[in-house]
Figure 1: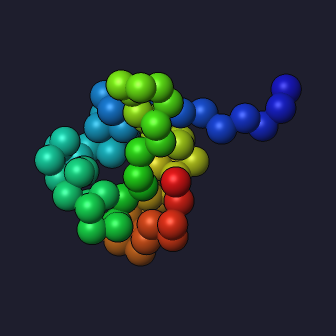
Figure 2: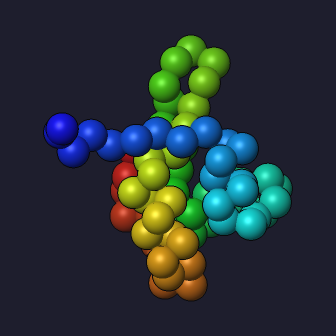
Length: 67
């Protein structure tokens, strides 16, 4: 099996991080939480690896220009 990146949706991200939706979006705007990835015209998700990096060390996480 290849090492493909998994995209997770909002409900999963909120459940895994324990953040509220408004807090998560505030952190995205501040660059301290991974940005969404557009997956369709009306859909978006997050790279699971980026969310896992945030979970591992939320205080030190910085969005380094991920798209």
